Image (cartoon, rainbow, N blue to C red; front, side, top):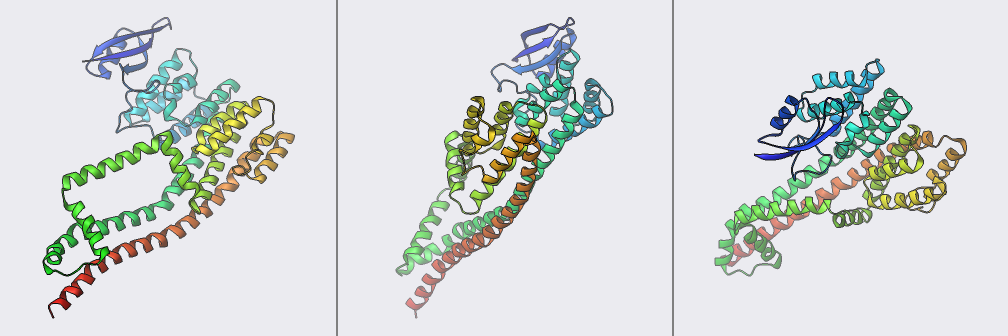
Length: 405
């Protein structure tokens, strides 16, 4: 049995909070429904972060494709004249993914009780990009939810396409790297150990690089369970380290000192920043709120720090273009100049979106340059590793043959 904390609406629309002991979350929800209570959130005591629904298990989460289809369907149904409750009801019936269905049911219950749609999505804020809630609140305030969801659909489609192109460009180099490591591991684990005894009993002096590879081979074949544990620990530590603040700093330091890759990362951050800022400002959100959400969506520590400083300047009455001018290494002169024109003419949001489209084409070119550099570099490294191991094996064999002739 586990204790579940719940927040519900009663028949009068008042919020009722409490706890209930049950075996599963579904059992707790059934108990609430039998008491004519409409669940808002039902969370395991001590489990999960605030605002995250329990149905988001480790193996089933709301991904970018789910969000994209959700936004597009909401845009189509609301534009057709259906109410938000009716639109959500259609989505609930058509959705097969349990985590999405549960989310929509809870959001629909909130909307039925007179609360805004954005309040329902706030319980799932960590599953949605920062731009989502900002544009949704603005759309509700202006009464243009259909237009807001249409713009969100365009934004999310471009963001998804950008990530897909980056992943596609890096797929072959990653496969090549894994294959290289696999070949080297097979040579060290299965080939060299068979020759170790012959080398040891021959009395032939081994070259230093043969001794080096033999030492690695002995370490890898000493205990396979220990190897598996060490490999799993390294993978876990790498994944965990990437999520820490120190790990992010180290990662971006490495990227910023890597040729071609540093320019690619900078341009991707610029695309995300200008596109998010432009879409938020066009939806009616204030400049400060738009900048804050854009900073959260960039995914680059260097830009996040700079945008945070820009937000402080804008709060003090400085224009966006003048604030961006203080970071010439991050924001190109072209962007600053166009921002000046946009602020004077009142077309800053349109200019930012146009700029993001222009730089997205440049990102494609940089991706091609990166893959053009990575592929031959990885092939060269693979050839050197395999060749070195081959030489470390062949040279002692020649010495052994010469010793007995």
